[in-house]
Length: 109
Image (cartoon, rainbow, N blue to C red; front, top):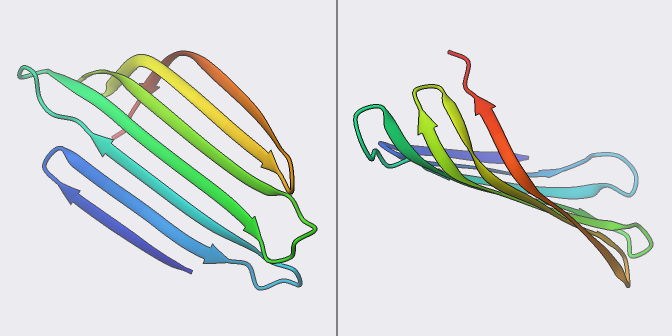
């Protein structure tokens, strides 16, 4: 597989594209994008978007898609706010689930 990472001041982008080497492999594609502009010296906006796709190389296997959204504030190493997880899975017909709520996140240094 391949991966890409880019970081500039308050913006981060990370992605990978991977294919398994087994019989009937999946192709995985992942994107993480994060924006953290400073509002004050210790307070920042926290916006994060994630997308993950697992696509089978055969038509019989199930496709899976996941998106995660986070919008909140960052104080030093802590982030908190509103979040949503959205899942789609299926082959010909897809089931959709979602989970909305609050999140608390800590970055360990």
